[in-house]
Amino acid sequence: MDFRDDTALQRLAEPGAYEATLTDRWWIVTGPNGGLLAALLLHAVEDQVRSRRPELRPRILTVQFLSGPVQGPVRIGTALEKDGRRVCFASAVMTQGDRVICQAKVTLAASMGDEFDLSDHVMLPVPPPADCPVLDPAATYGNARKRWQRRDVPVVPVDGAAAGTTGGTAGLVAGWMRLDPPVPVDAAVLALMCDNLPPSLRANIADPELAERTHTTTIEMTVYFRRPDPGLSPTDECLVVLRSASVVDGLHQEEGEVWSADGRLLATSRQLALVFLRS
Image (cartoon, rainbow, N blue to C red; front, side):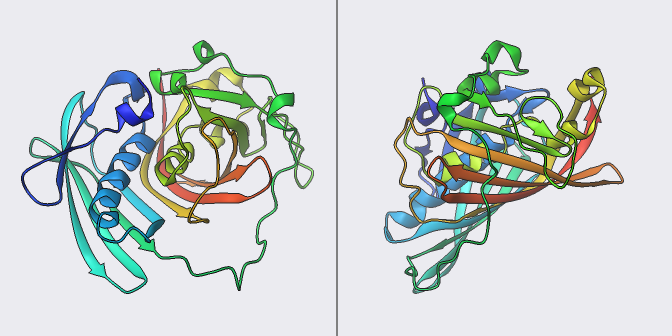
């Protein structure tokens, strides 16, 4: 099985409705990885919109996580909010029984051309994938981590911050990632990458045992897809960088970036999450 099997959708008789099955292959801590749920919602919207408008590509995905599902079937309903000439707005809701699990707003757009392109981010200075060790999947917590080939990277300290463990400085974690087995990289895979590193909050915690027990549960995540086509092969690895922005009243804000190995910014993200300690 691979990620395409894990996100397979079955069309239902009702227009815009789908069924999917959640398994423990993407379970982590208390339930399924939020990135997987986001990918399922995005796939459903893409199936609805791109069958009629193949020129449209996802540009923004915002997901709110309302409750935790159990293993088994879920239903996804989609709706087209506005079908514009160059920009389309759609929504999706995932339910399980009478509970709403998560809901999404998706903005899709046609290519706008490269007339106004500029470089507005700087890639973190890290060694290339071949120079970074592959992390043993058995060393990570939860089945979701086993779905990746991940390489930890030594991060150059920023603004005088002291270097922490491999893969992080104060408030920052990073790693080269690709799915294992590899699959074509699309917007859903990029959204998945934005939610599959350990919480960057851990890089601020000096006590290794306390850091390992520190987890976050995402309430809302927004992903901005910076290119209409990532232009990657299935085996290409992406650099995923997560930065801890703040923790206030038990809520953690985290900023993310996904880069190609040749230095192209593919996606940025922002999420707000509840902080908790695993016993």
